[in-house]
Length: 346
Image 1: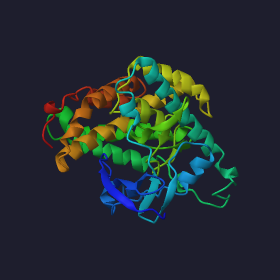
Image 2: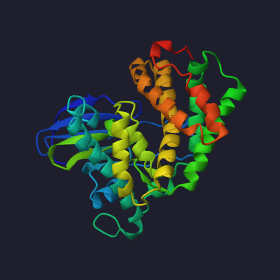
Image 3: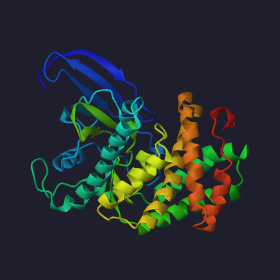
């Protein structure tokens, strides 16, 4: 880039294996973020699922559709030199603001979900600037499928179910989890398949320092994008273990965004899929928090269990009338303790 490095500061990240650094330079830009991929542990993803692709060409695709993503200054197969978006995530931004300002942030975030889905529908006709019609975009070959749902079920049965039971689960109890997640997979297969960020939560949305009204947020960590039901990113955002919104806030945001989605889903189907996907998304998160605390010593993750459990219990109760597999799973979920100190050792 033709600029010298003045200093390099590590940026703390969450549960991912990537490393991030803020680089201060002697020129322009004065700072940037370096994203470094680690050697992947293949056991961290389901057998048969390929590793996540890089940021490109998806970053360029999103930018060309007007979606707010960081600039990329260069890099190689393992490293990306990216625009420094600052250190104010959505989670930090809403920590000390009033209800009206918080709602405005989340309305903009929900609108981004709709814009991502609309961009996905237009991808076949892209032929501008950095990409041409022949450029393959891996996100459109990836989807939330039965293999991923089964993987999430395995995680929940292995790490979360013992906390509900206070003991090692029996085979029949593990099967209850798998049957419920399989039922979610069936609902998902019947739904429209739309482009999803895949990890659209408060820690992956940043408030730009130079923002203007209605154009405040920028997205990061979107390399895992795939095709999923239209509710998936909304579950990530509105059932976020790091920022717990009130049920009234969530319902208002869902009413507002539903007609803005390209499919304008039927209200009943929309709500049913939102609850069902909450079970699998939050079930996976609950298990990963326990796993990180037990295997990485990241006990700070246990502070996110209470909100996660509340989401799970609400969603399980909503899904219980749908079918017997959901009803049986609801009985187990309602036994999950909220407080980390109430969990048993794995």
